[in-house]
Structures are given as structure tokens and as C-alpha cells.
Image (cartoon, rainbow, N blue to C red):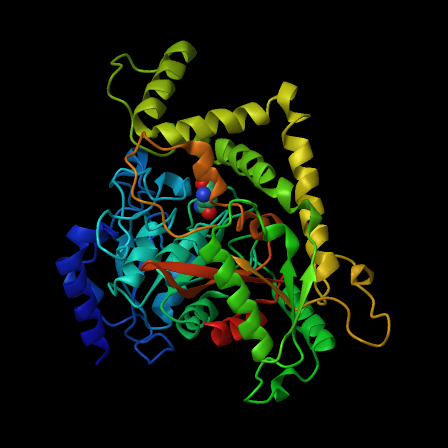
Length: 492
Ligand code: GLN
């Protein structure tokens, strides 16, 4: 039965991918169905799973949808991929994406745009699946695989999940090892999961959420224990919740600042309906304020690009990446070497990536650092403090006395917050080069705060309008991933 699911997945890719362009490369049939290294039945036994093209596998290209890495073969598999295979999953495909994870519509990449499997009522134009993990979201939504890995630096798992009508989970920063995830913004990057159901996403997450000494930013066993102890202190007895009001005793915050001008009427309706649903399940729903939210987007685009400019320096044709053949003289003298690097990077990296490297280099320069980079770091801290001020669970990274103190014997603070994932449904598929870049950056306004603070967040489908899916988003305190999954499965 398990091998049959893998066969069906490969059949579906062969049949439907020409239309969707969700998959960049599919695995050879004989390799995909080979039994995993364990041989024993793991929790993901026989699951056909796809992984984004910026996550290392030993087969196929780990291209990041970049010309520079078009033929790059990784000598090792990402820790997350090893974990999936150990749990019994079969990795069947590498998925399409925006080059190096930079984008929100899956339009910037060497494979061309992936397409949203959903069509608006009345047919018509193709829509974007969202980005940058658009291929993973489209593949799951179209049934090409049971689950897929994506990466989420500023929303790249959650935004495409919302636009394709699937679940997209970004765990707490450091829950899942980043070893083998090609770096974009290292302090923001997280491996995330896309799946049809919260339970499937949770099963994939649990298989991957283990310490990894080979990634120094992966949570240590001691930190994991500290979080578990704080959770037990803050919410004793959660397991006794009744079946009819399964979320009784939880408090959900609705952040005022997420009510932005760009929010469509349909997204607002879905948000209201979600809050009502959580209340019916027993939650107490209250308004909360996260006052620094409006600075989060510019701070994100400053910090992510600064980190990217440093991370992408390695694609110089010497350490990594294709090398330009355009300048014949070998780089014997430094002047020749810089020309060689410039030619190599000019050919290997796409226009959006080059633009971002230039901006990132600029904001880190001595003259600009004071005006852009440092204030953005301060905003990042303020965004974190906003979350620490509203969540009941203390932040395990900070001193325990920073937790809000109960005043009248009641628990202060909320357990999770509820907000839209995107301001609207998927946009029509644009042509590359015709994008309004700033408008495109605004798509991330609901998602980047969770990355700045390192907290877990999950996108859950929330119905449709005119045929196109809408998403809701839940976020919780640093380390509170299990609670988030528990709430999300009732919301879905
Ligand atoms: N759209 C955002 C960006 O381009 C987020 C990307 C991501 O999460 N990888 O930076």
C-alpha cells in the first residue's frame, strides 16, 4: 500500500506538472520506491513528500531556482530530509520556487512561474501560487504529494499555503535544523511544512523537530526541556479539556494592528468568522495590541537583505556556483579576478537577487548602517517585546521575570494570536519584469513579524471567495509549537 502512494504521486507529477510547473525535478521511479534506510515502519511510512529546491538532497539539483546553482549536486542531504527518510517518507520531487527564496509570487526563478491549481469562479486567468515556496504549496494543493517542505524567512511557507488553500506551518526558529537549507537570511530562515491537514503537517514537523549539533542555531536539548517546563507551569492540566468545548480555557488575542488598509473585505470576513469559531470552541477572544507591527515590514526587508548580501557572497564561481566563460584570461591579477567575479555573478544571479544583494550591501555600509541596519535591529527587538508582552507563556530565551504577572489571580496574557495570513486572495499571474516590486513586498505584511521574533506561526485554510482560497494565521510564543498545532486542527 505504501509503495502505491509513491507510484500515484509520481503518476500525478507526470500527468499534471506540465500544467502546474510546481515540480522542478521528479525522482526516478526506481529510486523513489526503494525502501528507506530504517526498513521499519516509521510515522511517515510510504508518504510521498516533495522538498523545495533550496533544501539539500543527494539526488537531483539543489538549484535554489538559480542559474548559479542549476547543476549543483549536494554531497549531503539536509538534516530535515534525513529525518523524513528515517521516518519512512519517500522524497519524490524538488519543487519550484523564487530564486534563493526571494519573492512572494514564485515569479523569480529559472524554471518560470509555478501556477496556482485553483481557478477563480468563471475560469479565466492563472493565479500565482504565492512564494517563495509556491511549488511546494501548488504540489500539495494539487495532490502531487502528501506533504512538502518549504522554507520561511518572511512568510514563504504561510503565504503560498494561504493562496493555495493548504496548511503551512513555520515552526519556532531553531526547532528544526537548518543544516542543508541554503541560507537566505540566517537569523530568520526556518524549514516549514505544507500539507492538506494540520495533522499531516504536525506529523512531518514532529519527525524533523530534533536537536542537531551540526546547526549551532538549532535548539539544544536543554532549551527544549526549559520550554516544556515553562509550558507545564503556564498551562497545567491542558490535557483535560472536554470534547465539546475542546479549546476551553485558552485565550486568543486579535491584534488590532493587523487591521490594515490593504485588508480585503473577504479576508476581514474570514478573520471575523475564525474568531467566532474559536469562541464557539471555548476560547476567550480578546483584542491585543502589538504596537511595533507597522515597522516590521521595512525592518524585515533591511535585515533579510543585509544577511542575504553576506550569505550570497559565496556564489562567486570559485567556492560555489557556475563560472562565467565570457572572460578568457585567468584571474591571475586581482583586477582580472574582480572582473571574473562580476561576470560570473552577473550571469548566474537573477535581477531580483542582484537588486537585493546591492540593497543589502548598501544598508550594511558604514555610511548607511546607522540609518538602516541598526534601527532595524532595534525594531526587531521591539517586535519581540510586543509579543512577550501579550503572551501568557514566558519567552524561554529571556529572563523569567519578563513574563506578564497575573494580577487578580487570573492568568494574564493570551495563548495565541489570530490574524489573516494575507491581505487578499492570490493575485493573477503577472509576467516577470512587469511586477510592482513594492506592492509585492507588501504581501508579507502579515507574516514577517513571526520571523523577526522567531515565534511559530501556522496558516490554515479559511474558505474561499469567488473560487479562490483564503487563509487564517495563528501565532504563539517562542517554543509553543504544539499548542499552535492543537488550536489549528480545530480551526481548520
Ligand atoms: N517574500 C519575502 C521575501 O522575499 C519572504 C521570502 C521567504 O520567506 N523566503 O523576502
